[in-house]
Amino acid sequence: MTRVIYRWRVDADRRDDFARWWHEGTLRIRSTHPGSLGSTLLAPNDATLFVAIARWRSQEDLLAFWAEPGGSPFEGAELVSSEILDELDDLTLDDD
Image (cartoon, rainbow, N blue to C red; front, side, top):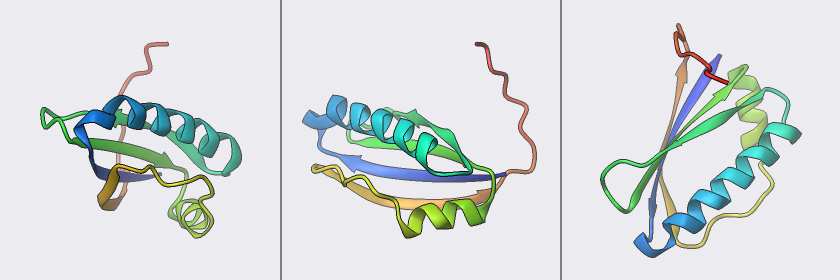
């Protein structure tokens, strides 16, 4: 498994709009890109920062998505960084 940590700087007055954009985009990506296993959106105490952690079956699936992501960028947000990591172990629980 592969994880990607994304960090965005978002205009403070666009936080709710950004969260909706991310939610809808993640659902679209998960349903249209093989290997996408979804993402978690996090909000640190900084009112202008968002962090998302996406999960992919493989780095190859991720790179195929990056080659043709579709969708549209969010006006009012800047992608500050992205970091690809190999998932070595996952002990989180799904409480559904």
